[in-house]
Image (cartoon, rainbow, N blue to C red; front, side, top):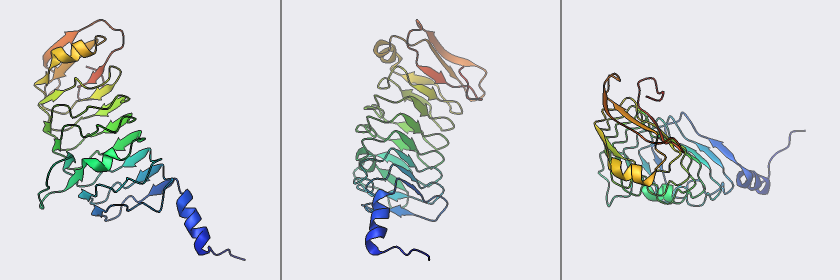
Length: 233
């Protein structure tokens, strides 16, 4: 005999759900408390939709959430701003702030143009951040404040000309290939804050002309990946 879920059993099932996959749909907006029925959710996959806006409290009740996959959507702005232009998509920084135990955030292949200051200030447990294949050209100073556990930062294939890395931990691996880099803001601050910096190279988009470089003693190196194939330059 086929078992039919009663209302209480259905509620129990939702409350115990740990992985939710909503990829490849036509979701445009994630409203506040959209996932309130899944308090024990650990992994949320909502890539390949057409998401443009995320409510400030979209994830606020998901205290165990570790992975958010928002790749292949239409998000434009990352961080807290006072207002959002109606003709563009945006992601509100508070939505990220509320997920304090998050380990992985995938925002690759969106339409991101800007990362505001303190966009990840409360995401202190974040280890992997994917921002590659966007349209990022503006990264505000202190955009990466708070990412004390970050191990992997992919900013490849954007439109970045200059970037401030002073707030990143010493052991992070950074992918920067496929940009139009001309320099790194506050390089002196970077080397003072991370004395283990071993090698720093920036290449132009053709990946054949070194524009700037500096070597330091190899103790606990930051690895900056800037070549076209993604390997250390």
